[in-house]
Length: 493
View 1: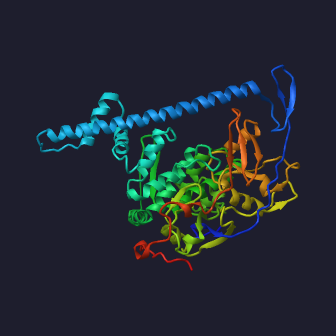
View 2: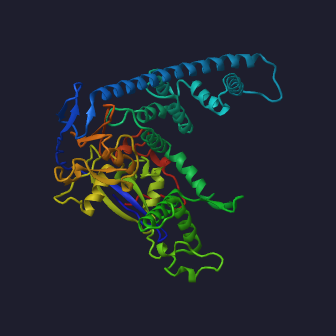
View 3: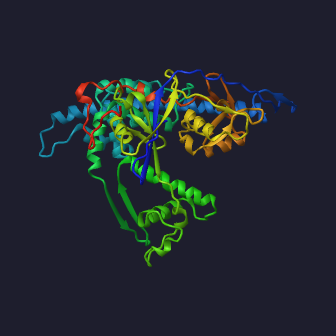
């Protein structure tokens, strides 16, 4: 991964992804055993996992989950019919308006239909308007409408696609919507977090020029404002470039967690607030920071700021994007996506530090390291996080850097190697430890998760080159794709 250090106040790290071919060590499949109680009350051993399972409850849970799935599909089909009714009403109201005499304040059919439906159903006007936008654009959003009619996408997600793609040309949408609404890598329904991440990434890849123009305009509007509240507190807002905001948030969060780990009794939210104020008021405060502080305001976290590390921002930049061969969106893990031009601007800022991550050019996956110790080496920790990218539990998108490192097959039965280690957020690690989920390694570096309802989901290592395949992320088309950013945007080589 390339890592990029900007100025001393904000070090940005860039993950610079290179395509490389290499052999992956074959994953081992480890088996366990457990007792299970059959209908006669006898305990027996099974080969999948090591937890006690009740077949009757498992079957009942599976039946209920299947019923929920069927009801959601039926709901989506009804919502498709609802949109058809919206469109039909819009057509009728449009004809009615055409026959009315002109008025000094003309009304659109959208306004009339929105008010009509809101009054009849009690649904908010804003929600009616969002549905109407999709209902009256069946050709523009034909992929979404087809999925809705088939019960394969909810109206909620369909409307999110509509809202995020308003600035895009009609020609881009079929491919984009197909990519965004695709199943998860294991074929199951994509989680909401994965869906949103895909949607925002694809939009920034397809509309990189428009996004960059909006970013340039927004940079000129950066500002700080605040106000006091009635309870004696206050609120301030800082509008700044995304990489700066991410660096501030991550730095303060890291300091707050260090303070908590050392015994500070304040909550993380309280510590983040106090630390941010101390940083803004006093900069890097020495351990005796009170000596330099005004009498009225004294730092509350001086000891923690005495050796505070600089802020770090990581951004993943595929090689093709770095050299200007692609306009795929680039990720700031855990925070969102930026356009290719913005990513090149970040990675070429003074003080950049790049770290190369070699990945398989076809799968986009990283290589593997191993050790015979229980605790992985520091290099292995960094490598596992690079391989996973995010938490390996189904649907979770917590960045790997914020996750625990867990043995899939407990040590020493399971070796301490990349193929037997996974990144798990605390919220996913605890249920696995409690055996709410059973986990096993399968072929192609997959990890199969099985729920109490008997549903299985497979997660795979992070594909660091995925954005390069987004619709609209192909090679820049001539001079028209070259956008002049405030500090120019040349390729780094």
